[in-house]
Length: 242
Image 1 (spheres, rainbow, N blue to C red):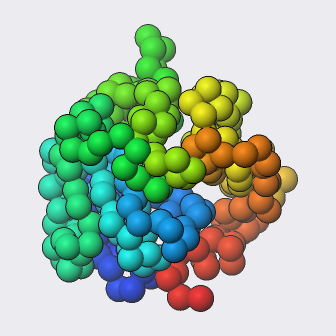
Image 2 (cartoon, rainbow, N blue to C red):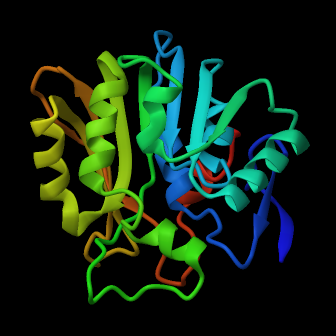
C-alpha cells in the first residue's frame, strides 16, 4: 500500500513509499550524513537509489548536481513522486535502468562523489529470499554484486573522487580488499553498534580514487539507548537542524 511519510525532520520533506516493498531505513540516513562533501563536489551519483532518500538528504547539504539510478520500475516511480512533492525535480535527476548500463548515460571519470547503500547479502542456494521480488533485489546480490558496484565506482569516479557505502561489518575486510584492488584508498571508517556493549553490525566507509594512504577511524555510532530509544547522536542525524 502506497503511503506518504515525513523524511524525518529534513526541511519538511515527504517521501512516497509502498509498504509492500523495501522502505528506506536508518542506513539511508546515516550514509548521506557520513560522506565528505566539499566545495569541489560538483556531481554526485547514488547507485541503487531506491525511492531516493539519499539524494533527497544530500540536497540539504549541497548544491551539486545529484543523480540516482534505480533498476526497479515501481520503486523508481515512487522516487519520482517524492521529488515532485518536494519540488526537487530540477535538483535531482533519476534514471530507471540497471547500473551496469551507466556507460549509456555518462562517460568514465564523471563524478566527484559516488554513494551506495547496496544489497547486503550474497546470493546462494542457502539464501533466505523474500517472497516479494522487490525486497529480494533490495536485500540480496541478485542483480549486482559488491565487487561489480566497486568496479563501477572506479570507472565513473574522477581522479581523487570519493566513494562511500554502508554495509555489514562482517564484510569489512572484503570491502577494503575490493576498494584497494580498484585503486580506491580507504580514508575513513565509522562502526555502527545497535547498543552499548554489543558487536558492531554495520559500517560506514569512504575511500578516494588514487588517494594516498592514511585511514581515520571515527568515533562509533550507537543507535539505541538501553531503554530502546534512539540515542542523541541518532536524533541529531535524523534532523536537518544543527
